[in-house]
Length: 211
Image 1 (cartoon, rainbow, N blue to C red):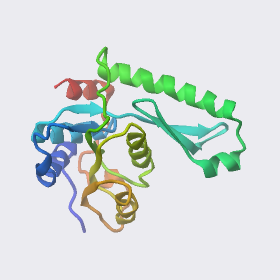
Image 2: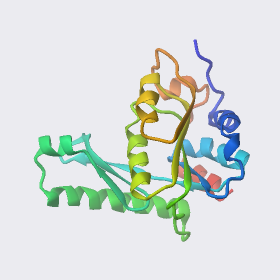
Image 3: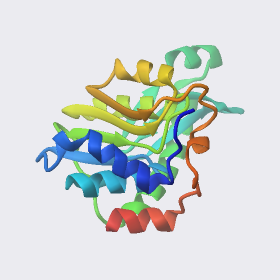
Image 4: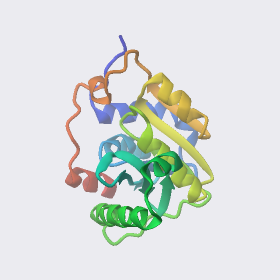
């Protein structure tokens, strides 16, 4: 059986050891997927001497069937759409835009809570190290990766403590590098692989981003 992490802090510190080659890299930035990814990413950024930024992703749900994702939006104004779901749902472009605008307002409110008056960092040409506390299906991370492509990031590195092997294999094909410390089988759930998986509050996110 694979070993559990004590908490997100320990998981982040262990990721640092696998990412040492990026330490002090002038073009690299650590991007945290809030909220659970922020404590992990904070340790990575501190350990590597790199800036830390939140990178928000909001799912775009099909009206009336919100659990079905027609796409996603992310920090920087990027939007990714799932053409297969769109075709099946038979939504008009106006309906898609209405869903987008609603989620965009929520995303902008989150960015304001986390960044205050500070504008998001420009990611064009940057080496973006995307960090979360773990992956299950990888859907949110896939949206983040595509958003970074749209924002013309120079290189994309995904770094997570734990994920199913098949999720890692699927994501690895679309990034420059993928680091995953633990690919247990059976996987169960991300939280199962942490002894302390306490939910991360907005207040804690703000504290870590300002540290």
